[in-house]
Length: 510
Image 1 (cartoon, rainbow, N blue to C red):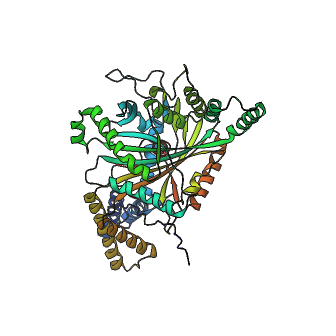
Image 2: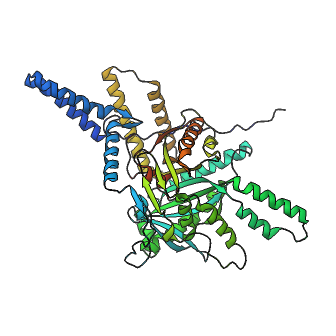
Image 3: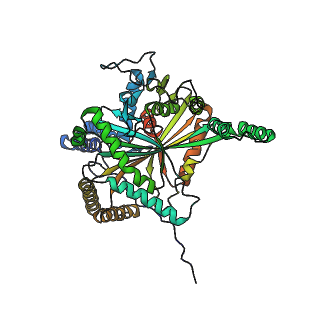
């Protein structure tokens, strides 16, 4: 009698967004192409060779800017980034120096002193409905509110195939449940970072639980073992961020009291409603971060050397009768003392970070564990991985996929008219798009997703080695990375922090 063997599920079908104005050309690129055509035709109408000597080089430069590629970016986009960066450098806007006193707001509250795109954020305190309080990150520009929970999971590599498939399907069901019309939850972020572990938490737990009758030799041996192994250990922290749009939840916010208080209450209610699905997917919520814990997460990303001190403070705070500083950091002290953005590196306090965006997922079918190479522990570097999801409602998903279908059909007609054969990559993309539309029509959800990676070192000499190791591990996972040239500070906010940032409000051209 043969026993049926459960096969692990495989995954594929990631579809890159393409929002070129015509084909792969952006609006600026199309304008350059049109201008180049007009300029190239002017000498013909004027019957002037002199005009041709001037017009043809200008037209060639415009076409090069429109169709050229520089490190994965369109040439015109690269030029715009370079100009913006040079203006930022000339005006010293790429340098952040923390003030002794951050300016207070009109209501007298002391805001966090953060650089760049993070300067707009505020940490609010809201009741969790169970007698405690949670920290809510408020973005007043986008009118969003983000709740952050630290979670643990049993992993996928060491469990049987049936459980592995079930957990991944439950996570898919969690995302699909958010793909509803005018849903209040606009963004989900999964963030994992690797941090050094000095063993302070382990020693504190051991001190509380060791038996008074334990042999002295055993206690001494255990202490020596923890002292030697602690500094070399690596800990992983995983966070789940849930972001609510107050504009999309306007009626619910008004019913909960309106304003920031009402928005925070609605967000806490929505999060509590999701906990059952999270448990089914194997995710266990360790804690919902308080304002001080939110500030600690931000501080440890900007200042990696503070992580050991903060871990020791948190371990000491668990001891009965502790009278020192509570765990976490005052939100006003969450930011770095200084930060500087260069073209390809972000320097903050005593560390350097390089951020990458995943521009291509594997074309072949992969298992659910294909991202594991990215999370390999490294002694010389700390890594952060952020997956940001934006659930689309049925109506918007239908419009987006219909727009993509129309663009592909137009590109196919253009290929036929110009006599260019369809490449195998284009055939594969068309088949993937059709399969995605069929899945949507059958009731599946559609989400926009971006993956961001960051590598941080405390010695500049080790930076390029750490970057090379990350790119090699990404290649093993079948990922195509692109360095966030000219936007390392914004990339850091998306990749190294669990604040629900990372997706642009509009579709960007590839």
